[in-house]
Length: 155
Image (cartoon, rainbow, N blue to C red; front, top):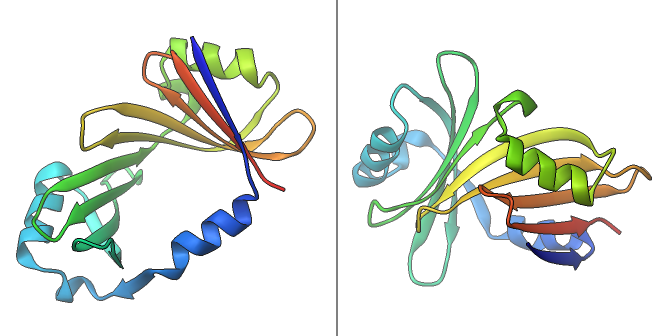
């Protein structure tokens, strides 16, 4: 098992990433982007979008809700290619091997948010937010098979 630990000031990293994103009206999103988002997330009603210049084009971050109330996020580039699909989960929907890896490296973590992210290369990552046993804020990524974990702590 490979462990990758990253310790950083999360607030500084988050601020830099958010500075380039701008809100956009759903009615202004190109049809190819909306079609791709709907194809990747059948039954989702989109309610907001953030657009970001990623250097070689634009990335549209669409957020929405399924009929059951669960939240979904989809990133689509301006060519209509899905970059990432994220869905919010509860702990009972997380595979046992992923839970075991999280428990091994962060026993007693208080998990406040869980997302399952499918990247454009089809890799699946489970993303956890919360606090460790000492109350320090942590963001944790665990691969679908539990073989790799990345831990980022706030300063």
